[in-house]
Length: 504
Image (cartoon, rainbow, N blue to C red):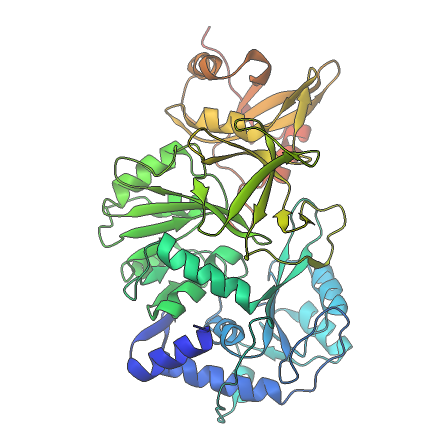
């Protein structure tokens, strides 16, 4: 059912049940419904901006949200899920110039931000857009005291404008229609074994899809959603103590998997990067009662595949990203033709979860459609059991001594080696080979052992020529390894990268 109906139902049946908690700021379902209804009234009263790139229903408004995990997100993000209005989800860490460009391309009818985001406030003022500071009294004043009956929403209506950097430095804008997340919620409820008891802790930024979708899943169920304004391990542990489920990218999951065992956690969902074997082992030990659902997907595609890890076994080979989600079909292609099992190819997906295209910024991007099939340009191969392995991305292929190399294949082999807790493989310009493979490793395994173990599993031309150690990987705002930063460090001989020496 639409999330509007789900929230209304939970507000009637369990008005005092906790809906959302953000760093101690708590809303029950009755309070959440009331605030959404008041926000709907306030937004509908705003004059609508003229826009060429986005169509909304007559009573719908577009509002931008740039305040990250501020407690106001507990009202502003569910409102887009349950009313005719749509939210443009801006990353608060973008520079002012990027915020200005985005607002100029897609003027919202209001922007909700923090009072210290002065560049954003100035940009809104120049466009004649009201800027409401959610960390002041202005937000409560804007909400007012007039809750209205929530109107019906159409499945084809847009509710979210998201942004993804993809393979370029400039964010690309895409719009999501309500029916795509409706189908996703139906699929993930079964795939992740969710119930109304699946109280969820998602410590990541709400400006990124993994945490925002977890909020939608949880509210749809009538469970409680927990997050924190910024990551702090003691605060994260307090929030996690109230949860039965965790949703986090692997880097944050690794941070949580320390200290005493957390037996109250029974389900974990992770995405955004491949789960390495060392972290899987740690997670199994730290969350002894939990099943761990590792899924592969993209903002543009939705869910693609899933691998569920139990205490002793996995639903697919641990090095893979699992089997296709229900109602999702896969086709791996080269030059428009489907390739044989075991042969690398571009991953195409057919289902009802993908976007139609970008609002802007899609030229030369990985995302494209071929009839009913869609891709973001990831390269993979189908294994003998039908599971999918990710090898890299179009444009990310390295060529060394005439051989085509996909870094993720080597990274997977490296993280299978005991003692290695993280691995990134980059290409560095080489006079005769074109590019040489450089492995950047986190861990304490001796170099001689690394080389000998890799030689068992990889042909000689796929073996890195140089090995560098790192104490801690730089991360993006979404918690992924910042490969661009590593590439810069490699070119500059940054002291954070320390050459590994052979014992001999």
